[in-house]
Image (cartoon, rainbow, N blue to C red; front, side, top):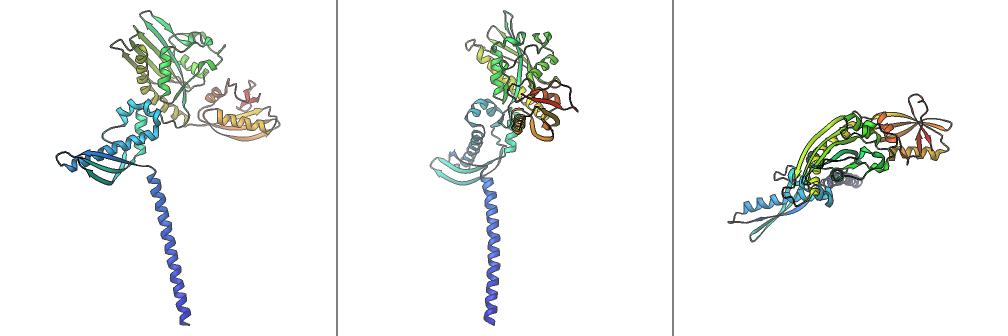
Length: 393
């Protein structure tokens, strides 16, 4: 009887021990997972300091400082890529990389070794990504999250002393080539994640009024051009080139929906030596203007897009379920700002949809009007219960 009782006690202790081991293994796995998540944000770097006058402490401090700078640089290369580093290098040097290293969340010295006059340290660096993202925003560096914002340029070019005036909207149906000023602006704004409109893809016949061809447009007329090209923002203004050596830019960024000024800038650059030509001067002026306007433009667009609307759409002329699938896919994939499409009702060859759209009804109409690649057309018939009517092609 005692032997049986003893076996029961042993079995009970073994069970308790097994439960404790199970808990320990669970906790160790959890901690390992957490450490793995943390380590994925960590960067290992080696820093080197010079030992002068046998001052090892100073050499170690210099080695750590170099390692921290290397950690920030490695993070930037990983985040922006090679082309991003090249494009944004001046802004990185001026506004992101600094001796303060405020973007470093913490660091640990893992190993250290003296080799003659050199003192080396192996450091684990962790970057504070929130601080770094804020620095990117402050310096107008676009990380490529989300879709690029489309923009239309309405910038005239005047060459002095000849007083030669060039601007595309004087005869928009001819789709004239880009001026030197437009080309520089396109390249500068593309570097900040904006997508300049290709004017040649839009048929403009009968879609503009005579006053919209004036060289100096009102904000309202500039916004009307933005509506025709279905963009949320336009950049209007003037670029004056003097003696092929000086550039004077005067630009304003406008929100299309309300024709309101988002931001403005006047910037002048010159080729003091007169040997470089006008192209690098134009590019420098355009980059400076883009660095000022792009962050404001992006904030304005993003703040507007946070407010969404539930838009009723009635699709007519559906032949089969495949047609309905094509419509829903086109709305969700091809129309920027559409967050979701839900079916509401069905009657005969018609289906009612509810479109969740980042913006208002007028903005949605501008997005779908005149699009040849969509499987439907807008119907001009009277609205049914305020719904937008689409008809299959």
